[in-house]
Image (cartoon, rainbow, N blue to C red):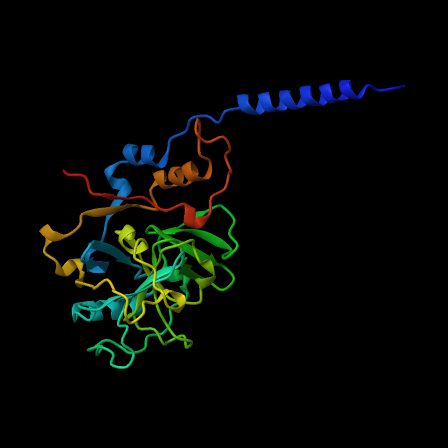
Length: 306
């Protein structure tokens, strides 16, 4: 029996058209966005930043607000607080801006470094801590290539390994870490960095993540890129000076930034994750049913006026 190739092509075209028409007709349902959920949230879905664990990195262009992860890096956080209270960072500068990676600040003068005062010169690397240190973990059900379990704790993106009973802060955008040399205890918090590019999760469990930027990331991610290796600024390049770094607790209440973070334990947190895992229509045409840990940041907002 002979088959007309023109008829065959017509059948294929017709079938393809039906599939396309069916796919186009299956629009994603409208779902609440993260912004919608923030508007729907209640006062007890949020927690204020703890002034005793919040840093203000003041630059000529504005203020960067950093929340310290004291549950995950208690010794490093304590040393940084000592450095801040003794005004170590005042007058230093941003020393590095590497494209799609990090912005780093501290003392760039290796020959005549600024004295550390009463801060420790070496602090043990807190690449992981015992799981018992973290009392606020809420698991995210999505798979992850860098950790057997992932989730959030007080808004920090966290990895966990039940076999080793360890946990750690993941290197997502805005994570703040302690720069070090080869030795695990060679960092002390006198040089810090913030992730300004795609999440370099290979740093997880290899370096101390001590906090995260909750406000002012645009000031760090927009710094001019350094021309030297790894984005360090050369001797002739202008460096952004650091005006001062202060603990919020040491700043008058009227001058503090009134920020609050959505509580990971709040029921609405799961809705926020789901809103990012399966985004609704009409703009979105495909729902992935998946979201990476670093693509599910916990909302931060200015505390509403009473």
